[in-house]
Length: 197
Image 1 (tube, rainbow, N blue to C red):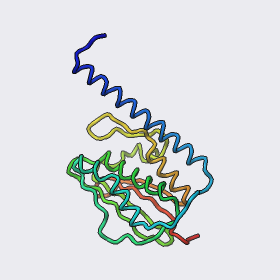
Image 2 (image 1 turned 180 degrees about the vertical axis):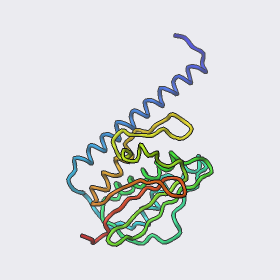
Image 3 (image 1 turned 180 degrees about the horizontal axis):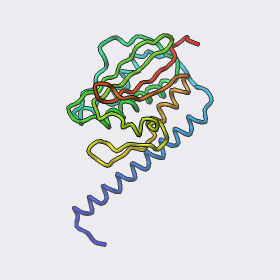
Image 4 (image 1 turned 30 degrees about the vertical axis):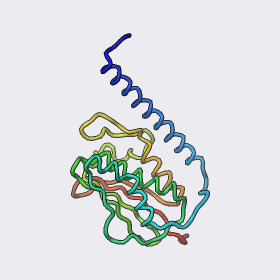
């Protein structure tokens, strides 16, 4: 049916937005299925944790700036090495930062830090968002489980944190998200140090 140009433009923008969202869902689902089918890492290398953190922050910097959310790497030097697949570990960190971005109000801050913990390295992403509702705490790593973003009814694909956990497991590690006592959420990714059994 004929429609005014302004309405047609809006209608087409909605269609394009939904197509992009569906494509992202399909791509992430294929990636998760591929990871779940893998039994071992492929091309591993020794990786500097500080470099991984810097790469992940660089990938998200523009999105954080556009939303007026401060993104920083903790000032304490990140100095430990991991063994793994660079692309996968960087993606896990980017997904944790993306999740923090989704729930961070304008004017707030997100911090990425890392430290050694025995024979493991721990990456931590702290945000100042609303935190995790009690009813969702046990489900946030489930495929397709997603919470509405603050101030909207919009949800994500529900695959980002599932990917993070799968990448962690493939590297012999673990992932968790908890509420911070001072407010907001804390996401953690534990990975074995290079050379540890």
